[in-house]
Amino acid sequence: VAGRQNHMNNINGVVLTLGQGDTGQLGLGPDIMERSKPALVKDLSRVKAVCAGGMLTVCLTKEGKVYTFGCNDEGALGRTMEDEEEECCVPALVDLPSKAIQISAGDSHTAALTEDGHVYIWGTFRDSSGSFGLTPDGQIQKLPVKLKLHGDREVVKISSGADHLAMLT
Image: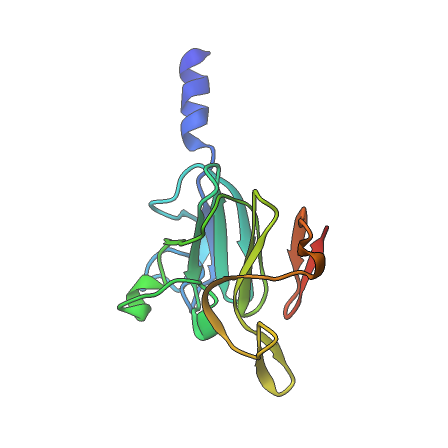
């Protein structure tokens, strides 16, 4: 029983993906655009949550680290890349100032809730005319920015739609 339990602990927290991955959202590298059966996303372990956005995937580890892969249009991956075509197709770390406890993703944006109740968001929102930005000044955010809430309220839950973010205080 001990050997079996140890084996089960080693397979918990891995990420499997399948489906259409033409923008790297499967995390399987630049050469795999489609999978009809689940495939292991390499170099990810101890994942406790996964979120599929429009054309991106976000993963949260048990240690509170956030990894993204997929389409980086308008900065939805929240990280800088030297070779976007290669790097967007594999998981990489998003730099956040504190431990994340929840993740959320929409069509072109991603959000993370940190243990201190702050929300960090990156990418953009869209309307029928195209991108209208993510912050009040209408800018696309290619790296995480902290949302400023009225009264500096602590957030306990986040959820994304295609082009909006809801937060529960």
